[in-house]
Amino acid sequence: MVEFEQKLRGNIAVSVNPLGRKQQVLNHIDHVKSKGTFEGPKKVLIIGASSSYGLATRISLAFGAGADTIGVSYEKGPKSERNLGTAGWYNNIAFKEAAGKEGLIAKNFVQDAFSTETKQEVIDYIKNEFGGKVDLVVYSLASGRRTDPETGETYTSSIKAIGEPVVGPNINMQKEDYYTETLEPATEQEIEDTIKVMGGEDWELWLKALKEADVLTEGVLTTNYSYLGSELNHPYYGHGTLGRAKADCDEKADTINELLADINGKAQIVVATAVTTKASSVIPFFPVYCIGLYKVMSEKGTHETPIMHMDRIYRDMIYGDKPEYDEEGRLRPDSWELDSDTQAQTKALIGELNEENFNTDLTAYALFYKEFSNLSGFMVDGFVEKEVTIDELKAMEY
Image (cartoon, rainbow, N blue to C red; front, side, top):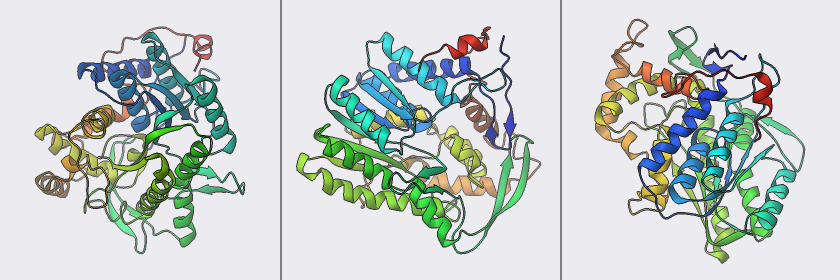
């Protein structure tokens, strides 16, 4: 029987509980169902669908709006009791099983979303087995590397400052340590490489391919998730390499809007709030911001997990009657995070933190750690331990 043990390397999870992940997917489905149904898209393509924002989007649209979905992701399955694969692998399986019970189509393409071949395979599937067209394309891909399909060159992103070093506090969850970190400035090449990986180029390539293949409906919508943050994290996020990549997505949205104009399509940048994801745990300084922010927002009743946030975005804002836009036309569900009193309290709280109190009830460290653990299937509400063999895990079909 396989034994599941939570293991970390710094702030990176290096183990997974497949059964815990299944329970968490079911928990998210229950959350959406508790909100009732809403009118939304019916044929959805989600690029980057296996975890965090992409998975939450897929769950919300399937179990809230009754959408058939295609999910594209790059994940790894189990090889041995010591190598059980990635959490996203099991998320795809759990989602497909649950969607199938509801009579919904849930097709998983587990392969490189950056490749031209994957784009063509998805297009062929839409044409031949998915009704011919999609009415929503969600781009939620998070990767540290990308191979350009035209040149074959591989680029690696960097999470760095721009101009000057940034010094600030960070957390090591493996050691439960609070320490000072220095984030070095990026070179021009590192900035450009980060834009190539995390910017909007691949989003644009997807929409071009889909448009040319005539698999987009009249009035199609495509969304891309961004993050701007506040003055508390601008030095290492908005004003760093990540911010440059997000700015490129803004520019590509304009290009995509021109591309889709003749079918009345729209590209929508969604500026999301700070939530716990695999990425947020490894962005320098960001965990400290989160444990302060979450404490304040929890007390105000405005803290959200990815499923809560994505369901609100699609149910209330994009397909509802409560949208909030900024002067750039971006959807701003992050307004709860950026509330002036919330930010002032967060700033004051972070200013009090040190190695003695960062993991006490003064902060939301325990909440952040639990949400982080949930991503790998640990500390999941409602989970009941069951025996499973490696052969049973290998037999699961995505």
